[in-house]
Amino acid sequence: MAMKAPRGTVDILPEDTAKWQYVENKIKEICEAYYYHEIRTPIFEHTEVFQRGVGDSTDIVQKEMYTFEDRGGRSLTLRPEGTAAVARAFVENKLFGSPNLPEKLYYFGSMFRYERPQKGRMRQLNQFGVEAMGSEDPAIDAEVIDLAMHIYRSLGLKSLKLVINSLGDKESRQAHRDALVTHFDPYREELCSDCQSRLDNNPLRVLDCKKDRDHPAMKTAPSILTYLNEKSQAYFEQVKAYLDAMDISYTVDPNLVRGLDYYNHTAFEIMSEADGFGAITTLAGGGRYDGLINEFGGPNTPGIGFGMGLERLLMALQVENIEIPVDTKLDCFVAGFGSEKVRTEAVKAVHQLRMAGIQADTDYQHRKMKGQLKAADRLKARFVIFLGDDELEKQIVTIKNMESGDQKEVPMKDIVSEFKVLLEES
Image (tube, rainbow, N blue to C red):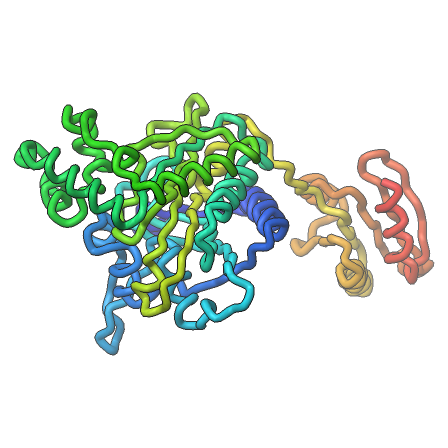
């Protein structure tokens, strides 16, 4: 039987990794401009981290996690998302004691969810995320949203829609929760089994159900915005004012929810409105989670963050016909032909060029000269250095500009310095 990658995973081949690297480097540059710093957490955690950090009642915890026991009988889980792991690290390493709060962090990592694979959503997905922990200023909410929008815009995406909502504080959420139970309870038997359970445990998540989204009761469900108290309303208005000041367009959607009990105030999603993107339009989603750090045994510490799927970002770029500027050309190909002494000198020349920071390669298939030139063409080499027995005897090499056809003989001892000049001139 032929070995294949597991369902829901893909190989990212060299012709595509260059695009990934470009996108990741662009994101890192933007994070540095916002003074966010990278954090790297383990690829697996104790299962309780996600039970607490994502929520027992969520589909992720109940249906989608890759969980296993190690040899010591401990339950471990491949991370399905990044926020819980970062929150655990924040508490364990006592980052809450920093005098420079908020702690502004970002991460890249593979996440694992056992769900039906589809375009842009795999069982192993790659995610970029941001967490800002230690401030309850609505300005940090606006900053996090601005950072996400800046990433998409800097890469050239135009068909974007930012949707925001307020979940209010604890008091506002409780009032809304009671109203949701009263509203949906008469329809309980008409709802899916998951929503029947959610109605008792976390009624806010009923609004996020994909199975029951067309039920008539969804259209008349009470809005959280109706139940915001004065403090929560003021907080939401300030977030919107900051977004307005930064000229960031948004739509308020009272049905946008983050279904965990410790989520509060700001929630947001960024969507693609490009034709052909598909039915699932969400590119990124995030929100404020002021109770999360406390769940991990830390002090009451406010926080806000988002997660961004990199596969979906690359898909959005493709749909909007945005070319990623990836340079796949090789600086120099060293073509050696003749005796073993020539071969040794060619290997030496490649090494010297590389030590000087020049991208260089040579033939490892023992091809004749014609075959080596074809290889140089396939690698899109800017220059080819020719080295044969005659050149070795004279202690020279010939450097050819493959675009212009110009050739130049240079002393073998000056290969690096002469080549640097040619690169600067080309």
